[in-house]
Image 1 (tube, one colour):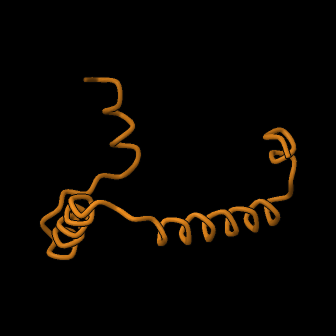
Image 2: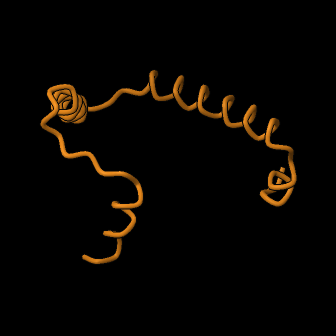
Image 3: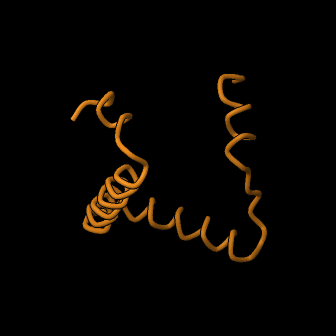
Length: 69
């Protein structure tokens, strides 16, 4: 299926496709072997979010910083 064909689908079908894709990606990610350093970093970040010490930005704020560096 081409991207043009996808764009023509009704929203309900697009949502169904997205759900299948996300489930497949989640399952693949769950089976991946991440290096311990990556797991540790993710755990640290998750802890900071749970503690409320992480600075979270919305997507619009992040997009505005892309390309400035």
